Image (cartoon, rainbow, N blue to C red; front, top):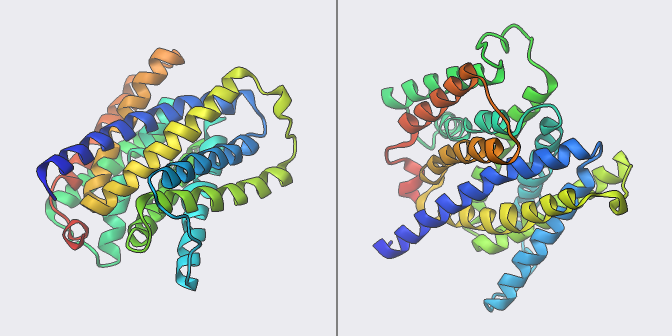
Length: 304
C-alpha cells in the first residue's frame, strides 16, 4: 500500500475512534431517557443504511443483492452480531452503567480478537502477547468490578456489566465476519448490508418490546439517534471495515484503544461523569495490555 494511502487509512481510523467514543455519550443519553430504546436503535441503522446507500450510488457503485448462499449467510451474520446483538447489549447496558465505564470495558476488544485468532489457528501466541492479554484482562476485571477485580469471580457484578461484556463478544465475532465479508463485498457494501439486516432484527425486537412513540422523543434523543446513525455508524463503520481490509483485523483493532480515551473525555465534558481512581487505573491496564498484545505484525495482516 502506498504511504499516502496508508497515512489516510490511519487518519480515518483515528477519526472513527473519536466518533465511536461519542457513541457512548449519545447512547447513554438515549438509554437514560427511554425505557424501550430498541426502536431508536432500529431507526439508527435504517438512517445509516440510507446514508451509506446514497454514498454508494453517488460514487457510481451498484447496490446488488448478495448472490450466493454463503453471501447471504455472511450478510445476516454481520447484521446479527455487529448490529442486533451489539445494539441490545449497548443500550440496555448503558441504562445501568456510565458511558465512560462501559467504554473502558469494551476496550478489551482487541485482546479478545487476538485470543480468538490464536484459538482458531490464525495467529501465534508469543510471550509479549500473553503478558499483554493477562494485563488487559486484569484491568478489565477491575473496571467491571468497579474497582474490585475479584467481583466478577465472586458473582457480585450486575446485569449492566454483563451486557457490556456482551458488546465485547459480539464485536469480536463481527470483526472476524467482516474480515471474511470484505473478500466478497466492498467496505461500503459490507456496512450497507449489516445496517439493514441488523435494522430488520432490531425492528422486530422493538415491536415485541412495545412502547414505541417517536412523537414523545426529546430533541436530545433525536440528536443522539442522528449522531449514532450518520457519524457513529455510516462513517465510522465504513472507515473501520476498510481498515480491516487494508491493514488486517489485528492491526486495525489496535486503534480501538483510543475509543475509551475519547469516550471518557467526552463523557466528562458533556455528561459531567467522574470515574473513580481504581476504575481509571483498571482502564489504563486495559489500554497498556492491548498495546502490548497488538503492537506487532500479525498473521491476519500478512494475509491481507
